[in-house]
Amino acid sequence: MNQESVANGNAFLAALSQKVSVGQVVEESPQAIAREIGIEEKLGVARAVRVLLSRGRIEQNGNGYKLLDTRPIELHEPVSVSMPRKVRHKAIPSPMTVPEPVPAPTMDQALIDRLVSLSAEIGQVRTELERAKTELDVCKRESIELGRRAAADRERARTLEDQLAQRG
Image 1 (cartoon, helix red, strand yellow):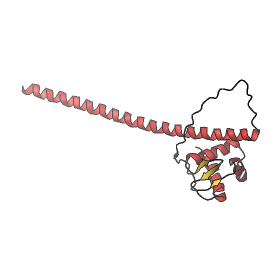
Image 2 (cartoon, helix red, strand yellow):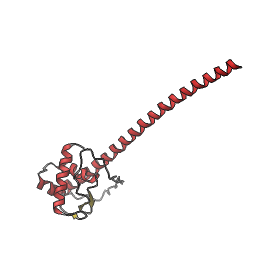
Image 3 (tube, helix red, strand yellow):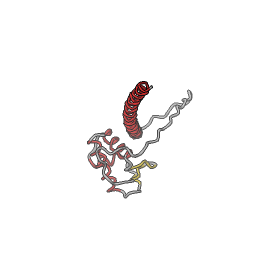
Image 4 (cartoon, one colour):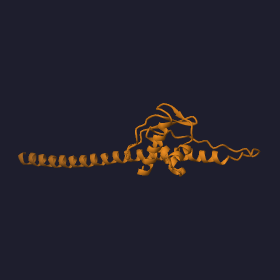
């Protein structure tokens, strides 16, 4: 998460909190809200929404987003919401049916929604990876310490064996 995403997320959160109070759902599209605050890039909008979703400030609710918390996001704030992974089943198209073309605005919204969900999944995977790396480091340190203790025990055993041999 970079500073621009945090700034856009906080600006988006401020705009949402002006429109609705905590616990209410805003029905406007993220693009419309982003245009009001000056975010023109669709990727910037998607990142702002993803940051808010993954930090538990908003949640997707039907056709809108529910405001959960109005606290600004901090730069290195960890992901606090695990995003559910969607199981996708491939539909087998019938040879007799022809799919209807999707209107461009609907397709844009679908692509942005997909981008937001994929970005959230990436954030979750990165968090899990960092946690696994930390656990690996701890295990390595413990292994090294156990090796040192074993070497010290072997040396002590040799010393005791030598002492017994000298007495006997």
